Amino acid sequence: MLQVFHAQKELAAQVPNLGHIHKLVPCFKRKHPEMCASLLSVCNELAGNEQGVRCFAGFESIALIKIGLQSTSPSALAAGMWFMDKLFEGNQSALVAQAVKCGLPQQLLDMLKSQLDHIEGGSAAKAHVVAALKAMALDLSYGEQVNAVLDKCDWWATYKEQKHDLFITQSNVAGYLTGPTVAVAG
Image (cartoon, rainbow, N blue to C red):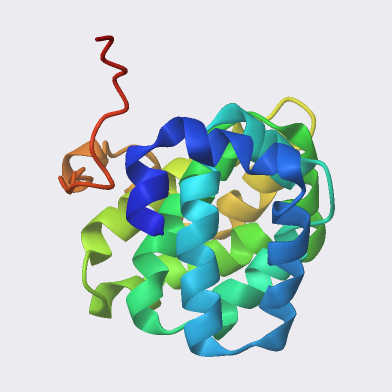
């Protein structure tokens, strides 16, 4: 299913309008590592478009997603960090407000310092965390509160000035169901 969403972006863009995100996010409360891992991967794909990001911003989702990040298996943290990057790069003040309210910037800093060193794709995950934190800090309404958290962290200075894009790689999987959706007449 994830590969279909990944390859068929227009399908993933239709899911938020159907109300499924509002049903998926509360499942993070169950704190089941494998379920949280799957949910983070699905949410990562659904946040790949503007409709998805706006849908996550339309209800109290960040506190539940934070639970999912705490409860998931280490192998899913890379997808979870990419998800954070997508959410906060979407420039939705409502998401940043939720993040500040539930303490997500501090949790991401803590994960950046320790947990992401020992996972597959750890460098890319760190790059996504840095991008997400920088995007939160740029928010016009709540960026000052995020910057206050970042400024209290003495080692954040080593990350904030570096360019981390080199650590992020994209991979496409080709296949029958995941191929392009070009309509051929005739």
